[in-house]
Length: 431
Image 1 (tube, one colour):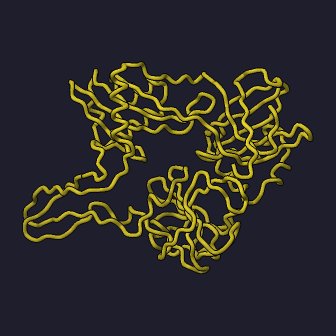
Image 2 (image 1 turned 30 degrees about the vertical axis):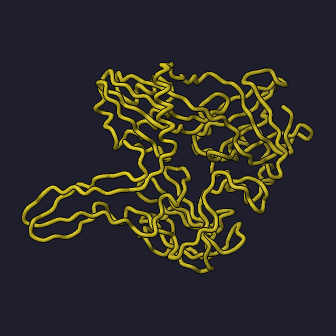
Image 3 (image 1 turned 90 degrees about the vertical axis):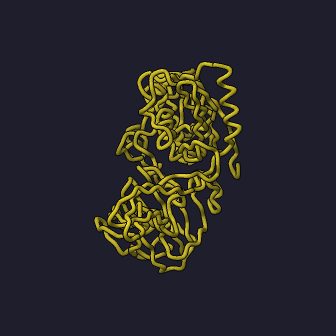
């Protein structure tokens, strides 16, 4: 694994291993990494050993995040594994020779399994799935799958929902959100398959081009086009001329550091001084220096979005200022940890980093309908959009085979702990 010397070790929950035990915990909301060190009576000297490149990831720890600690028989922390995204984690470990703590960022090692389930509706879709599987995340994702496809509120008692999903696990516990592959709704002997795209949204067919209907009104004297959705609701690009030099990744091999690191954003190549544009209207939540990011502007937008523009040579807005879509908020530079002039653009939704290129658009898509004045008539326009549905036929056959077997669904046990597999670097302590 690159320059890593991979060592795999297994830690059984509550087993006697040097008198140590693994305990899960949740990161307190508002807690900083320094607060955590103080709570565990660990010297803050460990912060001095963290590189400027890595220290910015301390702020990526989410409040409520599940993490694991290895505690010895004297109640002293031997090791902590704290996720900073879906693929990477902070490792804080005590050196057995000198007693000092070492900091590193390593990949998260997890298992991923595929599960099938059939749930009979008694109360409602969400409650019945959460109760039957003891996993609210699966119920949440099933609600997303059916939204806009089948009205779950019309489900009746006795109707059945069958589905296939994958779930990542650590130490036998669900890790991160599940992924629904396919579902089938059965009512009064009739079946309806729902196919999932890569983002978990459902469609009634597995075609690459999916139809959707725009409903509006037209009048009978003269016509004009009226947008169905506001242009401002769509995100634009942060530069006028787009040249992507590095894409978003939860786990990217760093060309300078020679190790894996998350890259929670998209890098755009541009000359120093190139104007940077607000991708959408919003309110400036930060403007100033941010460690390895250099000069930064952050903007909060509607819908739970927040954009970040890093490595600027000069910012042009202040905290609290309201900006319009396309307004100049700063200029391309190379401040902070940067090998040359470029824009590192990041985008969060509800506090989590997402791939900006799934949201940004070079041009706003105009969805419009014809309207005529004097007399109104209902108008429905059919439009099409491209979707990616992987392995649709294979998943359908798999679900049908599962239904023939009539097996009971897997029920998640929150108290069941199995083992934890960790890939570590050359400084690994034998636990």
